[in-house]
Length: 310
Image (tube, rainbow, N blue to C red):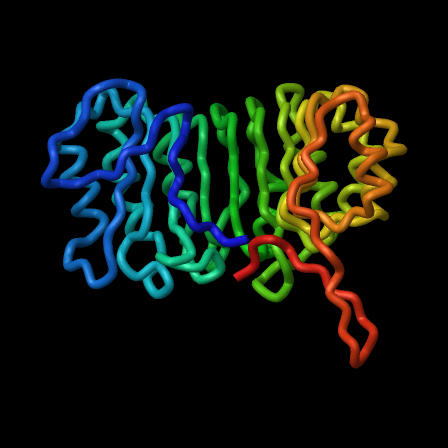
């Protein structure tokens, strides 16, 4: 699997590509995506400024930033600084997605990110933050009173990010989605570290937990199946990873999954027998995209792959 399409829906709004030469559409049901092309002579801070000059800044609720030029070379720090500089003019901005790029624009593990402290400080009213790309991503421990949805999509999440989240505070958090990825593209850490993350961020309002695209999906499932902090969670998402029968059997016999209303295990390595058992659970299970172990004839090793790596 690769990320082959730009986002079409964000913050419950239809996404529209911004074109400086076309008049802006009116209405509260759309969100604009700002992006540049390769070899574009414009700069993203200028594109942001030009867009804000045309729009009703007081009414702006959500914004998407796509490719900012050469994202595999230049990081997102200038983009973040530009957004932060306009924060006083954007009192109602509630949702930001930074890094909405397809694999044709930039592979997820090539996206050079930046430090998000200036943005989190500048937008205390922000309710949703979605970040794509883990390369050079910097998240420092933070306290944010209004974030409800927090997402990091990566092909390999460095343990420093998880360590920072384990020291952060989002008391209104409802939705936590982290793509752990593979150590081939920067993943480090273990289940014990994500136990710390959940212990810190599992608020009474948490309804969705996604630890996706993980090469340690089985280990995560074994832990989560008996984790009391899952009591409020309605959706458990372990999709895109390497989940197999070890994790499936743990989920089948879990003691803390009684409040779940949905489970997403798509892109998995689960046997047909255990798939049938999972489908008999009293809530919907998504088991799309079954995979097969890749065996090396030379050393008899079995390999499993996450859905999104490079």
